[in-house]
Length: 86
Image (tube, rainbow, N blue to C red; front, top):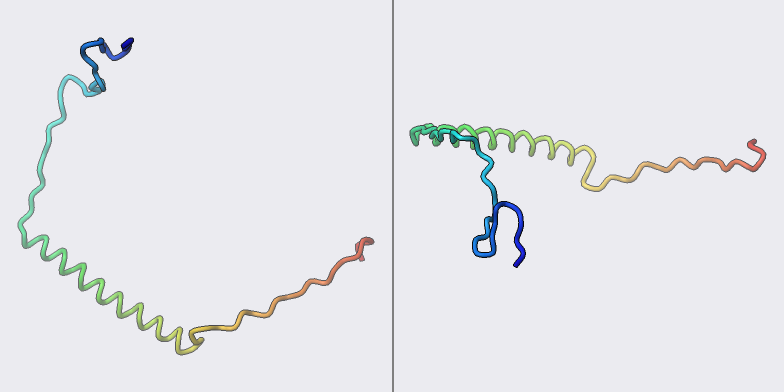
């Protein structure tokens, strides 16, 4: 096997080269109590319910005034021009 690059040899294949600097970044953890998650989920659920009611009200008003299937607007037929440009 003629392996070249990345300092690989026929007995040891290196798949990648590390691109990090000499000092690795420090990991961190953001932790919140479970009640914070529950409050956020409650707020999202209340927003979703209120929005759904608003969207359904809008859809019902649209359906009530225009119906489910509307007629297409009439097409405007352009008069054909003759070769003289009249």
